[in-house]
Amino acid sequence: MRATGCVSRLLEQPRLVQCSDRGLSAVPINVPPDTVKLRLEKTSISRVSRAAFYNLSSLRFLWLTYNSITSIHPSSFVNLKALRELRLDGNLLTSFPWEGLRDMPRLQTLSLHNNRLSSLPAHAALFLPNITYLDLSSNRLTILPAELLDLWFPLPGQQGGPVHRRVLGLHDNPWLCDCQISLLMSLSMSLGSPVVLVDQLLMCSRSLGQSGTLLTQAELSRCMRPSVQPAATRVISLVGSNVILRCDATGYPTPTLTWIKTSAYTDCCRKELLETLEEVPRILDSFMQESPRVGVRWSIISLNGLSYRDGGEYRCQARNMAGISEALIKLKVMGVTRRTRPPKKSRKPPPKPAAKYRKSLQPPAAATPPSLKDNHILTNISAASRNTSLLSTVFLTDKHMLRPRTTSSDVKSPTRIQSAPEPDYNATDV
Image 1: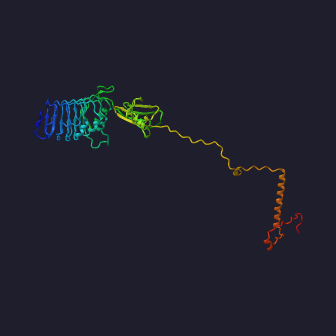
Image 2 (image 1 turned 180 degrees about the vertical axis):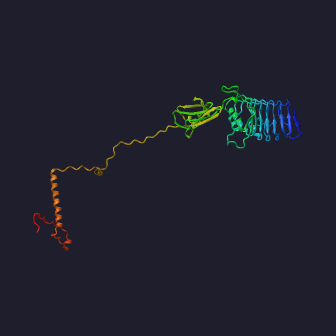
């Protein structure tokens, strides 16, 4: 059956179906299932519904050009696994369902020329790895996400396979002359670039003092992604104290800084804080930043009278035209610990020892000097001792003195020692 307002041509394989009836307001449902190329042009179709081409699993080329399409369902292209080319030129699209590209794994050509697209989301890069021809010209785009540059100009070692050569149409858009566009221009004109621009004459419609200037003449070669360095990555402070968190950033143009609290600390002993903690992440308003010179900016945030709810993770985020970077600072709030004092020593005197031990514990008394009478007696005793010692020596050494014999009767009886008579030292030895 032939669709209303459509012409099916089967003169040679593959089958081509073309519909260009102004009275056609919806995608026809009776298109032959073996259609390989479908062209819906200059119709009154305003929206593409869900699974509009589900029965056309053999479709390889789909042209929906110069209609009045304003919206496309994210699941409009389900079951188009063989589709290679999708053209939506000349419609009224303000957005495109980039996630719908997952249903077309073999798609290589995507043309969105002459629509009303005003933004290109960063997540679009996730669904464009196989696209080798992308035409975004004649729209209302102003900013090119950095994620697309990473996709189109991968760094050495980051590409998973062979680098695809891509053709991009970016002209006739009110681009903001930022570092992304400048980098794209410089890389596309380099030798052996993986990107070819359909038209290299891109116009700056909005920039700092460069409105209406050709992008090839703009001096934006100094663009540099921000770099953030915190003063400390981990801070521990007591409850009630004051803390200052600081970070420094460099980049060109000079980056702006923003503080964001991303998480909070709680523990088992302070479960009651869970009910009073504010929602995170949240952007902090009360902070100070200053730029001492071009390309440098620092910022501090002051936290006075710390409480447990102030603890958590803080991110210092730097942003400029070249990109975004951030640094993480962790703040932990500790409670005041009370130190226990050791017991005071008793000042009572030690107990007195028992009576029987007192005498042994007392120090010996100092000897008293002897009197004159005692000295005289001691002198006589000493002289007598010397005479006795001399007498013993004479008694033992005198060769004429005989040792008395001991009898048996004397053994049993106790020994009696008789002192010899004192010799007369004045007599003459015969």
